[in-house]
Amino acid sequence: MAQIKVNDLTFCYEGSFDDVLSDVNFSIDTDWKLGLIGRNGKGKTTLLNLLLGKYEPTKGNISSGMRFDYFPYDVSEEELLKTADELIRKWKPEAESWQVMVQMNQIGMDAECLYRPFNTLSFGERTRVMLAVLFAVEGEFLLIDEPTNHLDSQARELVKTYLAKKKGFILVSHDRDLLDAVCDHVLVLNRKTIEVQTGNFSSWWENKERADAFAKAENEKHIKEIGKLKAAADRADRWAEKNEGTKIGFDPTKEHDRCMDTRAYIGAKTKKMQSRVKNFEHRIEREIEEKEGLLQDIEKEINLKVMPLKHHKDVLILARDLSLQYSDAESPLFEGMRFQIKQGDRVVLRGDNGCGKSSIIKAILQKANPAEQISGCEKLITNGILDVASGLKISYINQDTSFLSGNLKDYCKACGFEESLFLAILNQLDFSAVQFSKNMEEFSEGQKKKVLIASSLITPAHLYIWDEPLNYIDVFSRMQIEKLILDFKPTMLIVEHDVRFQEKVATDIVNLN
Image (cartoon, rainbow, N blue to C red; front, side, top):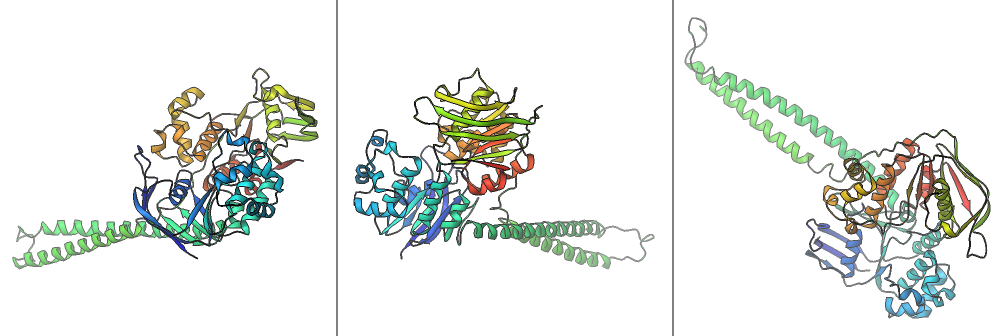
């Protein structure tokens, strides 16, 4: 067992005016199963790239005698035509095919997948092949960056079971179920500090809630004490000023009990009171000093809002004996599908990748807007009944973020959004003012997803259709979005593989087998 030590690490991208990481210090053991947790844009992927040696620190250093390897491996357009067995030579030259096959067996894959062109593998198969290569050689500390994005429930379970048996890695993930099943330590990038704890996500979150409650109580106690001290100091200061003015000059006929010796007495009393005022001020300074930093890592409980429209019909979507098939396919995606979406329902479509979840969404969008050509619908053949309520307004989040470019001001203008309201929603989703001046190409994938979520929330609609909205979205924002949905109860059709999210928000789950 070795250690990895990070000392006073600061990093800033060239041309940027804000540090991604600042004065970071921590130490970890190389046999830990470490979950890396933090908000979008906090520098999780950057930290992995620094460990990997891809970037040089602006300041500070990383001390370790370990070799590192990183998931996911890069695959170019040309390399997609090659087999995974050929790509092993690039990804991990020291790995033998038989070592990879051993790992593939552990992750529930047939060795035949090694010899198929990489572009013929599903997202789940590609992920599992890469993980098998990653773990094929011993003596490395592995950096695993969001392995379950775009994976269906079955593939997630296979990856979860596989990683639970391994050790010696850092796992970046926003999937609470995966973090709980796999990790024995967590490294948390808080708002201002960094902490390492034993346990998984749930144990850390429980500790955090207790610590936050204590910090808030201490903060309130200090605020009250500061108020009391300020009031006492103010009273003493006014008394001292008033009495200081009485030292000189008095009328013997009216103040017969005073003499010149009284002046010295009043002076001494005033000096004593002024000394007490100074003590009050010192205590106030100490209270303020103790109060500082108490709330620095507390996640602000900012409630998002959405104002769904009311439709005149109760049933918005009705599918009966529905089958979908692409004209160039030999068989339907599915047959005999039945479900309905009433106002207030939150229906989750669940099934393996490629089973037709996104195709159902495309068919509904095309029915709702026949004049608009929805990409991919020109080859989609619909049989059975798919009724969409007339005049239905839909707010849609696509999986794709690649079209986002330029600045937020121009984006708002192009979409017809009120800029101040749109930026306010992004701010509630933890965008800082610094991000507002950047082009969207510079955003992390999680931040791009938040732009799409903000776009959906600002759009008045009867039905909100979200296709894998939480890919790359941080844990804190996921819980924030869950609360929004439970508070405002919009009518929704959702494709999302996060098990915890499904459990929280779904009123009905439609399984596509």
